[in-house]
Image 1 (cartoon, rainbow, N blue to C red):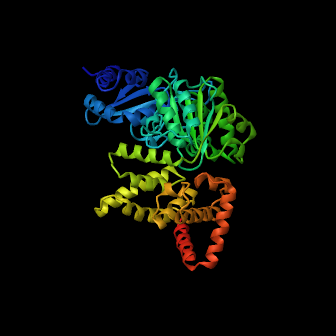
Image 2 (image 1 turned 45 degrees about the vertical axis):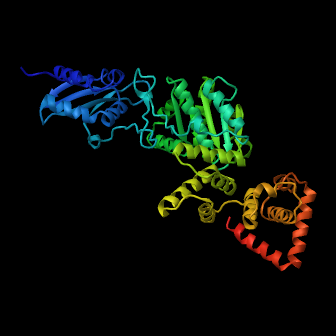
Image 3 (image 1 turned 90 degrees about the vertical axis):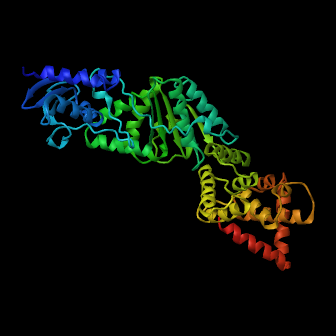
Length: 476
């Protein structure tokens, strides 16, 4: 007895049910209706273009095998897709699409995916009866709170982030804007908040997206006439994390759509987390109405980490990677790389690579050789800490002695040289330079600079010291 389309599809469902999760079966297969069976071609009706694309992307291999099992090697599956011309559900019409052959559709509206890296996120809004989709949050599991070292430089931002993670949308920190320079941990902290929220509230929909990706998605939505779908998708998030929001600058239409998404999320008690390289007051090319909303919650800055924090970051990284280095090497790296956590971790990786490739043990000499090359290749800003390290290396002195109150002639001279180069090569105030050199006042720094200037004019050996040191410092 020849089977009809209902019987064939029911046989397919019996197999599908054993190969997909109950939730997946209920969401993606129960709404499908078999339409007809002609010449080994089974036609099924699906609710939308998106629904069809999802099946093609996630279940096409399974469907192909089942159809061939039921209908033979010539068996094929076609989709009958109910398309809508507007939001009022009027003028529905049907198109046929052969499986895995989307090019067969001519002049049919296509709802493009919101492409986010390797795991495209489709817009669930257009599926009748489906309120939420289990989207990939795009969170990096390595960027957790556990791996985020706390210090004076980031304590406020980290504490605020942890409060938000415990009660998303329920604190005064909404939006939470995290700002700071390159490589100071903004993206890490944003991911950490998202990960903690997902751990505590698995039912919440959390999405991390860069401002650049958001902009490209919006452009695609405009081109494909799906701006409403784009907005509705983002309005369904429980927690929205936008990285590098300063790149919205000058993009009026993107700012406008984000303004409405922001308002909807905020008014419905959803959590918004933003990162930027500058505070709202310094953002140029942004609409005032958007900047004012950025100021509604908390703006927390991430500053350059202190020496102790840099050492702690390195030790945490070493522990995570199962690496053991001498303390003097760790301290040397922390003294050398002062402005950027990403660069600091890069220096550690470079040192390990040098040791492995050249089959040398990691010691202070190898670290010094590597740092000289690393600094030369990274156009790094000269800092007071770095100047002190170079001076101490040159005179073979421990840096603690340079910062001590000792009045030994060679120590005083090295300290004065460090002050001289700090005034010449950094933008730091005299008071700041003095504070870095053992708590000296600005008058002591001025006296040191005058002494160095006088000695280089009268003492050729001293002048040679300065020339050597300036060459070493100019690498940075």
